[in-house]
Image (cartoon, rainbow, N blue to C red; front, side):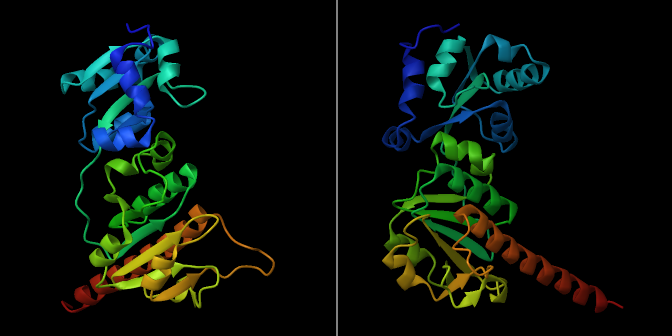
Length: 271
């Protein structure tokens, strides 16, 4: 049982709340039973895990901790005070892990999402969760976007970090070079094209800018068209996570409809 916040491993975990340390170490904090379970399901093992005595006595927790130990993960008991010192939540769940940055190749998909300057961790986590649900093949974050591995973003992503390929902290020259062969659309309240008028079945890139300033000049110059969500007169804008989710699920709907039509036409050819 670790009872001192001066413990070397505890100090190491606390240092991972800082972005430069996370990216130097290629490690980040995963807090809560559900997120650690999702990490295990995705085939990623924690570097080590901390848990409190109260947590370790729950039936579901016992099964999780047994599975972690069986796979060779070091599980360390800590006092409630130490857990609070490592956590950035007001009420820690009693279990916290350190994970390596996931390394996943982009999935072949009709859609890539680029985030340029999204600053709110809650918004970014929600967007990642929606991107996974809408079968986005890859998310790219441009420099100036909130760190995808900050604890609040990880909690908001609800496990998306372990299943969704994320190319993070990239310069615009790198992004343009990687995405030159597809239509590029910019989410823009003044865009000349409604989101449901876009042919999302084509290989596409959707760029979403930040909450206050929107996308930077490089993103606007790279985009072929601006895409908007028509709204009731007098409504200024939607939350960036909500707006992004609406567009992503319209893209998913179109791709699903195309796949259904293709299957139907193939089935008909055998009649």
